[in-house]
Each structure stands twice: as structure tokens, then as C-alpha cells.
Length: 400
Image (cartoon, rainbow, N blue to C red; front, side, top):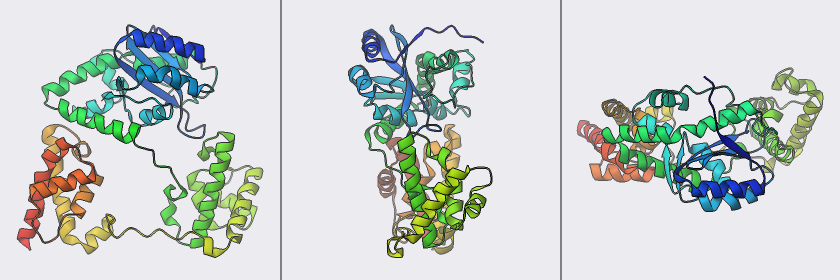
């Protein structure tokens, strides 16, 4: 189905001012989305920001090259206002980099999950509630490209075209189910977590697969490869994975290659051109020539940290049984409420709360609630799951 769309692409400070003025004269919440290019460019910044408001229309804002001016124009209009976003997390992060933050949020993807829909993607939800079939196919494009093809612009505009109608429909569903207050608690949490809280900077310790490196020398190689890759990626504005994938980085670090042939074999034949092989081999050589006293050590888990599954089950069987009982009961409660268990309570919060429970003393509902709050559960989650945790703990202590 071909959609007739009315939008304006704005990519200059003068156009920003005109668009901001039009949006300010509109009415109601702002439907917002972003398109990023993290698979192509360094960082996770937005290369396109789509904003739609009733009475104003849709604007596709291309801020690259004028990011300060974009913030200056749009922050007074958008900041502190009500936004509607589908799957808000990463959008909120990239918008915060532009100095743009909502005051009130409605996340249509999370709302659909709370309402019990198993396919909460935008296309499925718009088709269900609005009766429109969205076009697909451009979500993973290089949105840093200029000029943007017209088909890409249409695709981007459609991401905000029906968000107002979708939010209104989901509000009615959640209200009828008694879940609307739950939703707004979750939306406020998203604002705090993704828009207001500083984003944790990633380090080489965050590389997937790093735990497979057993030698200190391999950790040294991994660190220096990561540092060199980050520096080069930022300099060239290229996604780090396009220079050297995390998997190749870990494999090279494990092999500690001494020759170009060894490095090529470790990284996977055909993945690196000869010049890049020489570059990364030089990094490996420099890393291993450094004073071993400066090499990183394996990170030991904090004594207070939640143990691994195998360690927990093996060394703390009573607490492990409480965790399994809680999981089963939370899954049952989630099914009764028509939500996924991880929406009712994330596994990480459950693990932390149970791990910090006393092993031999009483743990009543109020204490379980306090543990859940400390772990990050929202009030609606605490009210439902604290009695479950307390009951499971009481069953364990009674059987001892």
C-alpha cells in the first residue's frame, strides 16, 4: 500500500527555526522517532529526528553539521513536553545527546507489551489498531547518507504518522485492564534511565566473549586492540565493528599471533585486507612488549555480586530453591495478568532481591518490598511480587 505523506525535511539552522515555530503552534503531544547509523558511524547519534504534532504536521530533522543549532531551535519547544515514542530506550539516549528530553512519555511498544500483545512491533500494532499496513525495508540503512532517498524519507515519516492514534487506542486498552498506572510508572522509569541518567561509557571490559580469555597476556592484547580500534573509529567516524569485529578481536587476543599469517588465521580468512592485518599485528606486538606489571588482571567478581547460575545452585542450594520457586510463581502471576514474566519483574531484579535475602531469618513482605525497591522494581511490580518472594522465603525457612 502506497501512503500519501505530507512532511518537510529540514537540514539547516533557518529551517530548524521555521519547523520549531510550526511545532510550537501545534497541539497535543509530540510523536517522535529517530534514525541512527551505529552500524556505519562511530557512536549512536541520531542522523534523523522525526517529529509530528497535530496542527503542525511532520518534520524530518537532519541535525548533522548543525547539532548545536538544532538543540537551540527545538529544545525550547520539545523539552518538558509530552512525547510518544515506539520502543523509546535508544531513541531517548540519542535525543539526550541533542539536548532533547521529554517531560512525559508514552512508549507504545511497552504499552503493547503491558497490554499482553505478543507482537508489539510498530507495524503489527498500527495494523491492529489503525487498520493501516506500514511499508517496511529501510530500518537498517545508513541514515548518515546525504541526500536521503525519497523512499527512506517516506519510511521515516511513517514511523510517526500514526503514533497519536496508536497511543490513544492503547491508553483505552490499558485503562480497561487496570494497567494504565503501571504503564506510566514504566514510562517515567524510561525517562530516568535513558534520558536523565548519564550513560555508562563502554570499556574494553564490556567486549562480548572477553570471559573466554584466560591469560593475562591475552587480556593485554584485547585491551590494546580495543583502545586502538576506538581511537581509529572516532578519528574516521566509522563503526568499530566495521574495522574489527568483537569476535575477531577476541580471537586475535586469544591467539596472540606473532605473524601476519597467524593473525589472518585468527581473525578469519578474507575478513581483513593486508594493510589492516599489518595494523593490528603492530598493535599486538606493542601490547606484548609492554611491561607485564602494567597488564590488566582478570576481573574478580565482587563478593556482594549475584553469583553465576552454576555457582549459585552448587554453593547456595537453599537460596537457589527460593529463586526457582519465585520464578515459577511470578510466571504464574504474569500469566494471570496477561503480561510476560520479564515485564512483571526483570530476571536481574529478581536475582538481586533473592540473593540479598537473609538465609535463616524471617523475611516478611515489607522486607521483600524494600529489597525489590533497592534493586530497582517499580511500585506496581513491588506490590504484586513482594508477597511472592516473602512466601517463597517462608517456605524455605519452614522446611529447614
